[in-house]
Image 1 (cartoon, rainbow, N blue to C red):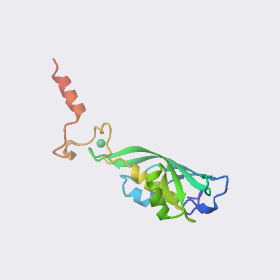
Image 2: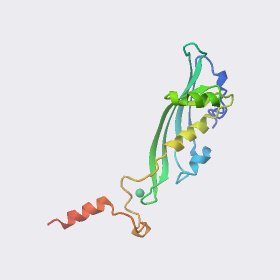
Image 3: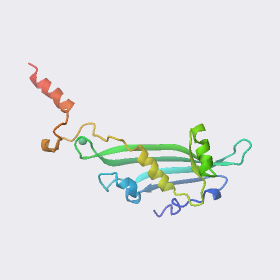
Image 4: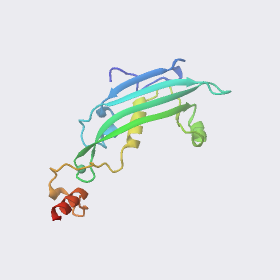
Length: 174
Ligand SMILES: [Zn+2]
């Protein structure tokens, strides 16, 4: 991604006192683990915004916080008709960087934000990918599956479509 060549290797300790804002459009093809979960590689790019800021903590040195937001529409396989269904995913999360894995484990239960370990080559897009994977719906499904799906493709144990049942009742009405 040409606009932000360092989004995969951010030097966190070197973030300026006034903070750092990044944003970008990342192709799904750049996120290999996510791509494996999708029905089509022709997904629209994922828009994301990240803001890093230092906050002075009482009696301690400044802490680095990250606010990560992303908006995506990802094609997943509908669990009913198997055709792709676009699922809208919104990420809006706060993270705080701590000096070590030990501190992260020790403090994790006591705070609302997620803790990450401070590092000189932080991969922001990898974190974005983690968050998108966590937010994928377990059972993606159309609100109404497309009509064009042949009956033969439906699993035999499939429950009747409630809309079809309703339509049937209507037809039986005098
Ligand atoms: Zn469907």
